[in-house]
Length: 317
Image (cartoon, rainbow, N blue to C red):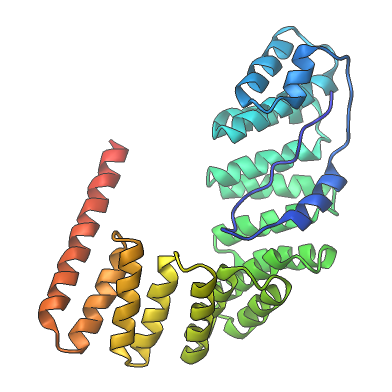
């Protein structure tokens, strides 16, 4: 029986990570074979995750004797659980794989990704580290561990991991992108701009790259450069409300209140629940002395905030 595909974390918005995925799969996956049979075929090859789970479960209940085959069966069922967002079950199955085969790097990696999804970042970091202990050339594991470090705001360690990933895959634009975000977290805006620019040079069609570079320009005080980047992001993805809000904020900074209002209004048109768009448009109206319109926007922002809090309370209960 062979292990199925490596799970890849989709944590970058629209950014693709296919280049890193190929490298990691080639480095980490080793085929292992057993006797054929319908359950074996379904456990390995079915696209129906429920069928995978039931087939793998029958194999495990039948008492496979070979520990390596049992490890891979748990692993395959874990993948199916993961895709169905049953993360506790997935993590449990990967743990069983590791118990049976402590050298199975993909099981550590996939359990790390599962913990990552569950926001159990420190456990994810420990498993990414185990993966790298078994295969120090797994660039995807460095990249993923960097994301986990970023999630807990340990940006220096995140940057160190992104550096290692880039040493192995120097044309991986998503890694430049997330390293740029880490530099923003450290207020190293010039370094962030350099990274975002590198990512844009490699993949000029990613709107988030322009959006984040715009943020770095804005925070560095280069507001007009920020507007240019937000405009490019809008051209690439005109349906993204946040780009209009960010550009509107830049116009507001330049005291171009009319233009900021137009951007906030467009953001609200796209996303009528965008609380900050109402707040900021209200502030712009206030600057123009249009107090009645400002008050209406502030009221709407408060109403949206209260509705969100009620929704959160309902979900908790």
